[in-house]
Length: 233
Image (tube, rainbow, N blue to C red; front, side, top):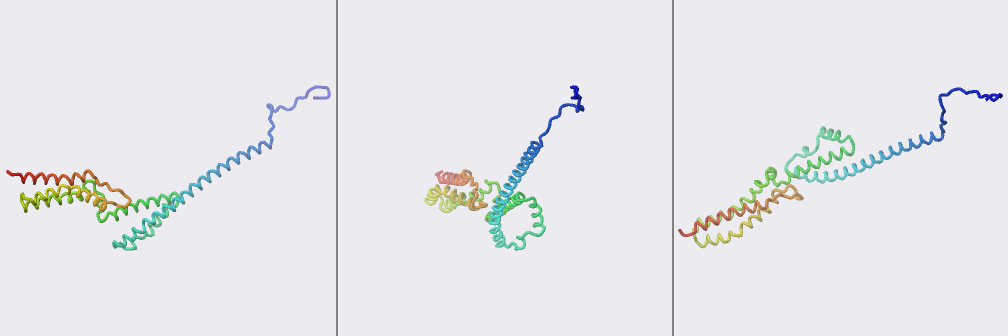
């Protein structure tokens, strides 16, 4: 406005402007940086925690695998395996190192794979000399145990009948043989568990009903046949 009371227009700025407080701007930038830093810190803490858990799990797994490998090594040496064959070769060590270079998680995965291999080795070493039979289907495998036991008593009864004929000895053999199928079944049940158990902690499918049937049928057929043979014509 001039001394005469007129208004002198100022320069055109294209519209009203809002003044920015420098203190508020600096505070907003500080808050954003603090939030970003807190997010980075939380992510780092989570990664560190996961890594620590992986390291602890890998140490426990390593202890367990070592405990499995020591008796296996002794057993293989007793079986005549050369000691140099039980030590990893340099290429195998290098390949294992490359596979575990990703960190504790990769080490833990490798140790778990090693435990699976140790389990497979135990299945072979502890099969009591029958590793192939232990992998047979259950019923044919168990028949190798139940079958011979089920035939012992009927064969003895037939032998007594062939020697003594229809006499008191054959009758006594038939009477004595009545409870023996149950005895044969129990012996077979125990034998299957001892012969085909891969590890002491494992359960073996003994096919109890199948075993009882195998032990009972020969005895019933033999007894019926001898009774018919002893009947007077």
